[in-house]
Length: 168
Image (cartoon, rainbow, N blue to C red; front, side, top):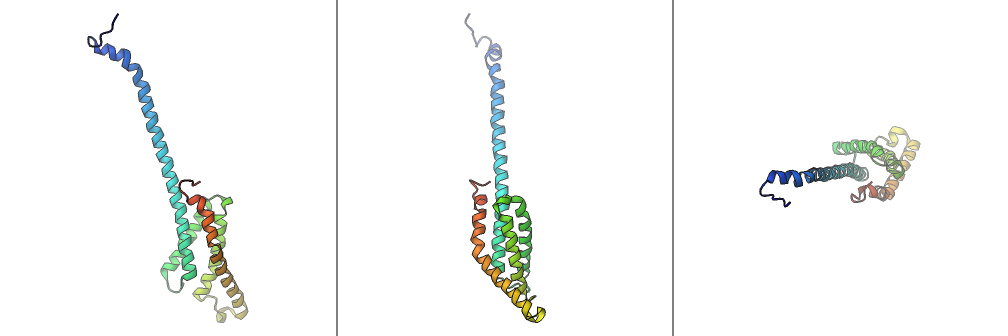
């Protein structure tokens, strides 16, 4: 018996097209779901990258303020210090502990504290005495040297997290 599709088109659709419709729709839904999952994953990676890069930028800005800043009556410099404090706290949640980034930024913060106090004039010899002033001045100069020598280490520690194509 020869089937004549022109004579009965609804029978043709029911017989030959309907069995393929469900799998084709399921395949299309699967493709769309996969694309949405991939987009969501990439968005999450980009958001994480942005937050990590913001910490890096904040640390560099703070470095510039600590090394070059006056710290006297400068609200922008104080704001930089506050942003760094927030970034320091965020860093412990955004980077693996084994990366050493939080520990590095914590030490950077400790060294910067002595530098800032000296630059603000809070540790002058007439306020704290000459012996204590000399100890604080040593902390100041050693802190500046440490920060200047070790800043490239921060870049190296953060590099795996800031290479977007290979970011963790």
